Image 1 (tube, rainbow, N blue to C red):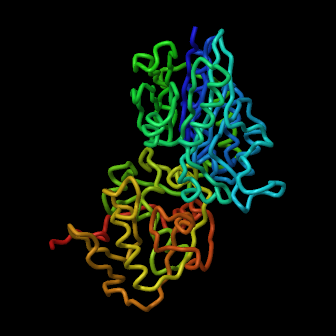
Image 2 (image 1 turned 30 degrees about the vertical axis):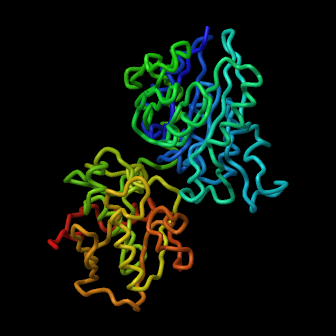
Length: 464
């Protein structure tokens, strides 16, 4: 009989909720049998609060409990650099499959040349065959090709064409006469093209945080969603019909106390429960708030950056603010890490007035791929941006227009100097100083200045 697949992906912040990650582990273990394969499709080590303070190693507690059969890499699995994820690969029980991640010219010592497969010395393989309950399943994995420019930790790696990689590995697997080929994909919207352009049976997807169960070109495509909200069960005998997919709500699953306790222990040891401030009026940070214009959480972050750097302007990119429960009541270090759970310093840059004005124009979404209809910048007190239906019309600092040739200082996340997907006007040559990690800046600011942001008409809509 064809096996059943248990599909998890984008676990991310679930590690910060001991009960939820414990229930995901308990649900996997309760559904597992001799005819099942447990498979992950990336971003299952990062980002998150515990992830950042333990460089992704908190995932080993989960992996050890559920013993997955295979996993592949998501973009955030490289957040702490190739060495960190390589060590996790060495210590985790599953096989890691990756067909399109290679070393670039500046690969590690010992890499023979550019193009050498990433992680092969730790056991990463481009594809593998798994025998289960009398059937054979071929597995391969691919990662979003833009990871190299999105993730500073992926410096030194090349992410090749996933379609070509899957075609190559599928041909090898078909030669071994497998009963089915399953792709572990962290491509997001790229799964549709992969289905149309390759000869595979199932694509288990990730990267995009919404759940999915679709049939494209006689291939079944699934995504379980993010943060361990759901676990998918796929009956290969019914594929490619969407009737093959059963959705299990993790919140209804049994609790694996050992995994939950491991997270509580890690959290306590890292000092994440220390209170740094108090909020009377809850500060929301959901998708609608952070992407539509000025908001309290964005103002708090941008003001903290400016204050820490004594800069002219503080800037936080909207996508860097993670969604989660409102900040309310006692605010802990963990709460602030969860807002910006990245191992990135706050960086001080120098820009001309002309460049700073261009940066504000780029916040309108024209330069941000896949989310061009959103607002992408939150700025500190003193800077005002006037927008009309055609874009940014004017930018003023303390009420005065920016002077084209005057140099201004900007404090923002270091990530923006590594990517051309957001604010392409920023480049490495603008950087003049690095400060503490983002959450450390927020915690210090909260302790000394409090947490009481207000919407102040920093981003204004004007008629044309």
